[in-house]
Image 1 (cartoon, rainbow, N blue to C red):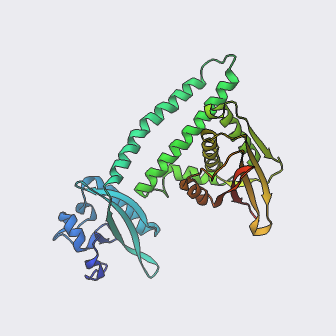
Image 2: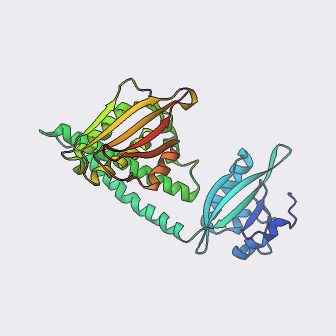
Image 3: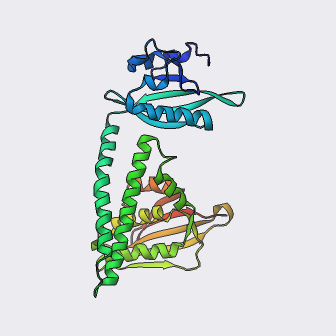
Length: 321
């Protein structure tokens, strides 16, 4: 049995429980006893499952199994009464073997439950929207079939991005990022190579079809021989699309031009995508969160302006050396 003397864990204001690979508890700290009253007087030797409410038992036992058999930390959530906790179960190793597990619990802020409830409420309308798009795609074609198919394709891509974003919010809140289906799908997308010129033409065509782009053509200047980008094209496309839509919804401008070119050599080699607003004035309208999105892609987003020519926003994406 693992030794569990009362040490610094006794002074930690977060619940901690130490267990053995067979699923029995050997120690809980005072903070655990305070919040989980069933633990008082029942440790050592009590099954871990008996220290938690019914809905949490399976998650706890699963985390113990993974930590003790695979040597990996596991994140999960559980509830005790009306309080939610974020938990991490980490293996205890001795002489190259997993001899136990330590579970640290952190009380969640009040808003997390509400956000998770909103995510659950979003799932049904997202499914209904997907079914509607599928039904529309199966309708007989007509004189406008080509345009209809294009619009349906755009709508499906937008729905996919929305569902992906909702799933990632859920994964971040629950700590299930490593095992979630959305993370696996994103990992598959990140391994893809895609042509930047085709991506820019697709963004421009969709913006021109939209209400904001009506009568305001977007020029694309990108050589077909540009080096391919490696990553998730959906994330790059979503970022650039929001930037274009912001321009079209803002102040008047003479022309909007999307350009792409390769710059630099070796480790400094990059693809520079420019969004040029001819005739526009003032600073870049991009919000801070767009710059944060660019940084998450390993890219840099910055703006330049000229009093008479207009302004441009530069997105610098690193290329393999």
